[in-house]
Image 1: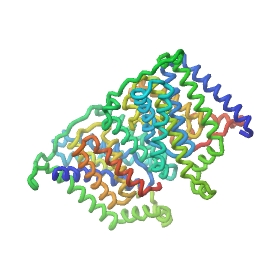
Image 2: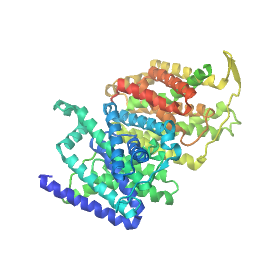
Image 3: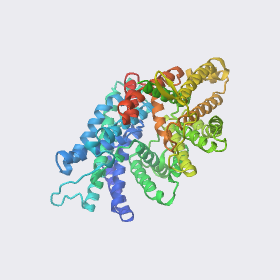
Image 4: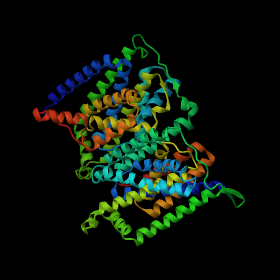
Length: 321
Length: 277
């Protein structure tokens, strides 16, 4: 990444690779599943900004996914059925939530950060399922429909697939720009040693807060896209017990790299979609897989592959957490 | 109102018994131990399996269940937790969560996923201030107080306790004195796990036993530990009873909000007193 030009070329090349990869697995998995995989990959990317780059492990990221999901649902229910406006509304709900909770959350580190997120997620789940069950449909959830204009029709599967893939590519490109910018490097420095960054004169609180808002709004984006994909919302979109899924995905793929997040998302979805039907005790399998990742392959699949690759050619450096 | 207070004290007592192990592992080893919830669940399931053999003698069954947890917690400590000392706390969370996942799946394999009810082992109600209370709950509260006093004496008077208290303050200095700190951490881990299993055993007759019972309780007892202070036995004692009362009082007016309220309290405490781990 020596010059601006080579960064631009690399991100263009990466976008082509990702698009080609998803188009290649689409005939194998079917269009519905692939759309699902892509959306989950966006969520992993959002989570990875906090975990892989800033070094803050959130154990309640479903809250932000759920805020987007319920934001888009309530917007279409009460304001407008325009899908694009609804997506923007979903993102705004996530950003607002991140901006409000951020100052409380980002002051903590380590286990405290993980648990306070979990606590907020628990509160959010309660609000959706019990306190506001009349508005959100409670345990049963509710269905959502969007209006159509011309060729823009979100009930058309190939269109939905194309739109979601485009969203992933745009997200990837923006995050690529973000992480290689001076700002992104500062975020990584906060992960390495926050005290030193403070000594250099940076107000780390603001940087952490902004990163948190970026992560929460991207998660809400993924949540909004899932609603567009499924057409209904249930409390499982905000269920705190599912918060580990995204963590597994980020870890299996390799935390701290954008490629790793996408690969991890696909691998995790493949495990939970297919393995569950072949191996009855798949949770146990996942547990052992996770232990192996923690003790042996801490850099994840992508970290391992790129390490092998780097020994022969000079590939993109991967930060191991 | 008195029954609400009694209920709050019962929950507080059980929360204290469970949280003390979590607080000690958190305070000494800086490890968030998700496997603690697994041990708690295992205690309840062992009780169910041993009760028929113990001719429904609850005390004998409980004793066997608590003792049966010792080898399991030793294995968890020896092969997972000990390898996590000193590395990033995120990996500790993930690895212990993986252990909990494996264990819960094993429980579903062995005992099945459906909840198993248990009846009150004492079965005698007593009247106090004009209302009737199950004697069993009073026994639980007394037991928690006894355990609290026993732990205070343990940490003040015995050598193992003193070393652990010193290690809570400064682990490296204790190691510098030539004491193998890891060995004492193992003791503490096993003691904490036994107390968690005891909590599971005591709580089983009040609710039903199911594979995921540990996870919810674990979250609440994390809140207890964070509010009470890491490795602080007196703080854990106070915060367990305070949060138990919060749960009971909230539950009296709005049942489903009881556990959520605990997290609200924890959030407020963390805002004013952030903990750096």
